[in-house]
Length: 179
Image 1: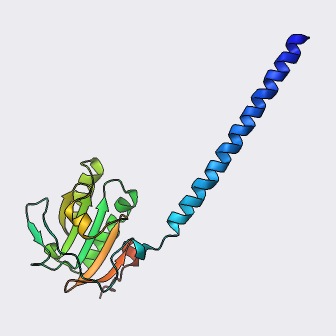
Image 2: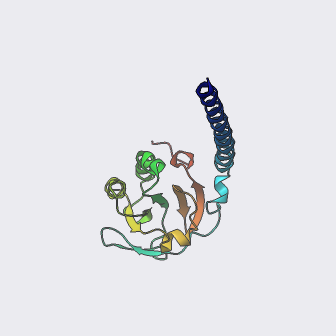
Image 3: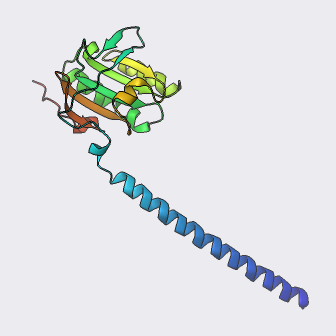
């Protein structure tokens, strides 16, 4: 009989500890949910260059060895992509379509891929190489700093060195209707 009572007391204490830990986990999940909602509700305009501002000046070498100088060839389409961003990969077909629909030549379409060398980086390069000048840079590279990139992907339409449209989604950018 004393073993039965001791066993019930230990069982009761274990249940109490389990309840306390479960409540702590639930509280922590609520905090994380609130943080995620706050992040999603953030205005993309806060992390992108504003429409009407000057396109940052930059110079880089593409993966094909071309020198890209924004002072010489004013980019019309600029895409800032990350190797750690699954959304970047998802938006590739739309980005290629946008560049093709707008009939932008390679020097005026610039895709900057930030991050480490990975299979996703190679996939991004191979899909964009036919339609855009592709630049690979590590995190914190000069183009990322020039654009003050704080969110990926980031897409810009520009003309005459001025940002005409900016978005984190290719579909939100102005697309002409094919004739």
